[in-house]
Image 1: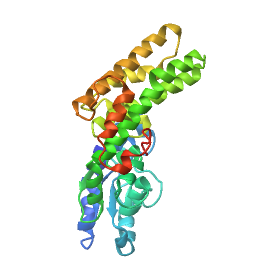
Image 2: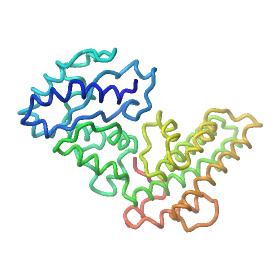
Image 3: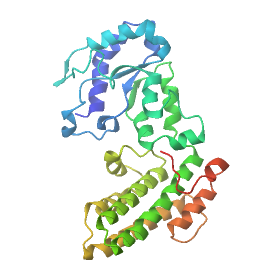
Image 4: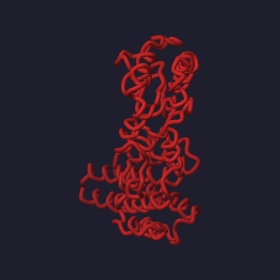
Length: 312
């Protein structure tokens, strides 16, 4: 069973009735499962059940309600059945740990965003890590409350402001250009094979970010980045060649093959940038397209940052 499904079933079986015992605050509580963990992304499997897997759900309330209602909600959650559908609750704390149970909206978002609200400026958006935004918008809300949680999540779920998306695309295109065929081959010429593999890693890392950005999605934490690519509407077919680049060595007969992959992936990405009409260049040079995409950024502060500045 998937963790998200288990959480929803557990809430339906016990959480609804529990909240009915708190009529003064029930309509202000948002319930769901959101945050870190493969289960919130829907990527969990049998192996994922060895940690942080339990019948559970999250209840978010605004901080101003904690003094009056927090203790009662925490105790009620702690008293819910310890086993459900063959799975046991984890004994982390009487409140369910810091991922489940009662959570304050402001503290929850501060964990991901550095403050208890959505980014307010383009620079704040630029500097908020994509994996944090992916976590904050993951999972599912089972019950919407009248507090701040759903309003903040709605803003985040809309994706990056367009200027921020374009600035990040331009930066990662420039980084792909620098680290891909150029630095990869240079490192090999110096017989620095370890550095060559690092160059490939940097190329792949930026290519993955660009793919998510072109899909208008947040790239999740690195260990789920490839898995998430398989579900994307655009460029999901570059996942395998990108994986190949960092899964294989640099033996003599492999180098030309890898260079070919770098060129193919670059062409595919450039083709999608052109399709989205975010570049005026007609060549296949990543560096040229990086500057052309940057020219489409309207905000002067973002446009005047270093080409390779992408924030978080």
